[in-house]
Length: 285
Image 1 (cartoon, rainbow, N blue to C red):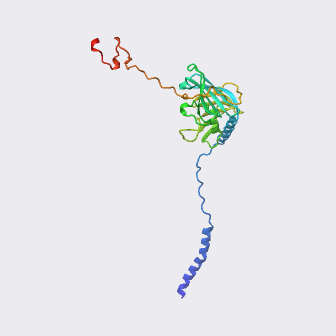
Image 2 (image 1 turned 180 degrees about the vertical axis):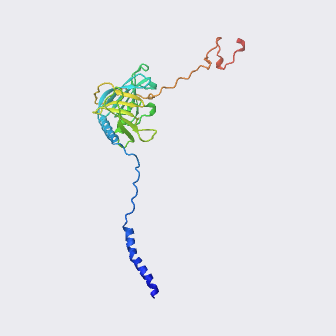
Image 3 (image 1 turned 180 degrees about the horizontal axis):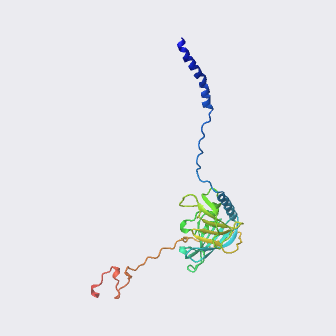
């Protein structure tokens, strides 16, 4: 019996210390987990401010009704004067010299309550009177083959600039030469085959007047003080049935001459036509 006393004396202290060890293990705080890495780089405060400023100016431009003239500069081409009319009833018209047929035809684009129209204007190469073709509803997207693009900064691109959900990156920018106002560099942040607008520089006066745009189509610069807007825009001519003028130059007419410069359908010196496939009269040989 006495042989078991040392075992009891050893087990008792261990039993008494076990709850303390368990309590110590439960009361210890678990190790802190490292913070998750940020999903994207933080945006500089200045970029958010620029986005807000540009959105406010674009919203003012949507409410700005005027008649304004802009100089369009494109590398390798003569300067052109673009006339923009934003009427009080929300209709608009943009006259674009050289806006069709590869720069050889002058056109006007207009959106009224009756729809979207392209008007062919008289020009040196097309002296006939102006006439218009209806392209669709006023908010329809203009097919690329008909689109001169210079009207977008005054129409649907303003909607994109005011939309904070649009995938855009905005930062302050220097004004193009000859331009004034507050200018912003705009880039798209999502890859798309049809981006919502052209990347470039957009400038506005404090009242919302667009003063300059540098985009893929060239550089537009306000050329004179804007004039008061009309109540509504007038189409440049009567609406007729027909096909609108495409933006690209038409393909060249096929050349009927043979590779050596001769015309196989022309008559030979003796009056016969060797290219006609006829058999010569033996009596005349």
